[in-house]
Image (cartoon, rainbow, N blue to C red; front, top):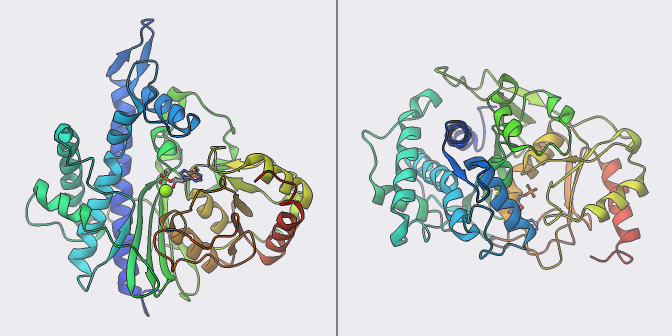
Length: 418
Ligand SMILES: Nc1ncnc2c1ncn2[C@@H]1O[C@H](COP(=O)(O)O)[C@@H](OP(=O)(O)O)[C@H]1O
Ligand SMILES: [Mg+2]
């Protein structure tokens, strides 16, 4: 696997995503322990509320209010202020990936990524910026553990801001650019649940390699055994500290690289072994819809659950949907933990390339199929958005299931209210 086109890029990308996962785990751990260590705010009625609890409440309010920044939660914290802070790991990952890629792959580096520096450079964001600088330096110091080189000393604020703002490419049909979602699934992240770090390389409008870090996705299928509506803040966040949830993995593939691979995340002082610790992954062999599992976003705001349950019934799916945050859904299909992923966003919502690029190539190289709801490949050549997307996204472990879902969409679309 290390031979051939994009091998060097893949090697660096996998190492960088491992580093980013480690950074996210550290931040998530801080969030969890700040709620365990008495960093508790008090509600008006004097009942205690954890920092993690506030985060979850605010993100939930934000989603349910149609992303209204003026709403506030029971502690009086405003959603707008909170959203600035919760992107702290996103900026930190973006800076780290940008710095490491430019350090190792200097040639005309171009990156499309989700975050900009606007909020970070506001006058009242000093504390936040200091936290980002500190987090990035902590992470960079660990680079040798992942087979990469740390800078000779701690980086200053301007170098880190520069690294974040360097990721301002707009993509498009020509040339080579990286696409990064530093923390995909913010809601999953603050809930101590599933989230992903997604990095892909696009060349002339086609995804040529993808790496998906899934810090809370267990190496085996246990995730499916967790109850669907597991919403208790305390017990959910504390799960991330148990052995099962410490596992996590990184999946990757390159175009025509002969497959997709998975590595466990490394913990403690262990060094990343490359490529020895990788195992090949394949999609599920199931073709009978009655035995297939569908996965979809947790949030109704992000995909129409009633439409997808109608499709599921039409094609004869029997199992409960697996509702998971972030691109871990792509990981689940690639690794054979589920057979179908569907997403039907509300009319007018434009899907972004960083939410899909890495997942698509990993599923395809693992043997699966990903298209829009009209059965056409996703078009990554039109800039930051999937401009030509027909209605929704359908990813399947094989062409048989895929055809059934596409047919069902055609049969039911006109009578749907989408
Ligand atoms: N109204 C909307 N409809 C569909 N997807 C949306 C959306 N608003 C945000 N998203 C995207 O959905 C992603 C989360 O996916 P999921 O719901 O599958 O967990 C978000 O990624 P971020 O969390 O990186 O912003 C965001 O890009
Ligand atoms: Mg995202």
